[in-house]
Image (cartoon, rainbow, N blue to C red):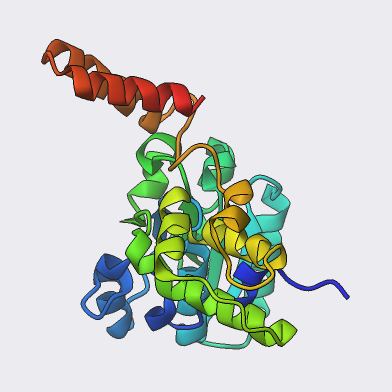
Length: 267
């Protein structure tokens, strides 16, 4: 029988279960404070993969009672948007419609503009997510009607409780008592560069090839060779080039070698 990936089965159902993002959904997080006042604006979630953007959208829909529709901009079309609007018009409820649009940067200007009318008249509340800088990839008219929230890479320490839950759930699934110490979990989380989903995947694979304790030999084949997130011609690439240039100009050989090595190691 096909089983869902562990990361999907472990998806948090409350803000308390989310790893990291305290500045947004912690006790005093700005997004949580808005939601506590029943304020749900149109939003753009911006941040690296595996940091909780989809999860937070799910929790918002659940706690607000709004009807949630999910689309991915890499495969969706204008007709899909119209279908959501048509469906929302047929819902006899005052709770409203929440549209979660993943990878909004894949929509062109016309597709993004098609959302404006429905955002303005309140027929939909939009939560769009992107791993790219929205101020470059989302059109100004849509940006001006939305609030941007930045999701940050999850620290290794914040990731550990989630990885412990992953091991516990796998043990429950298979009736085993395999273990993984905090040092190993910290190393996995750090190597995955703040991507919680990737870290869970590493632990899940390592669990299957371990006889007892999950150790370095078990996780090493599944650890990504490039630490953190990098892009070919985006913000991260040019930020690193800028750091390299300034290190050379400032006569700091250690920093220059570090940034050069990171650029080369990242491909």
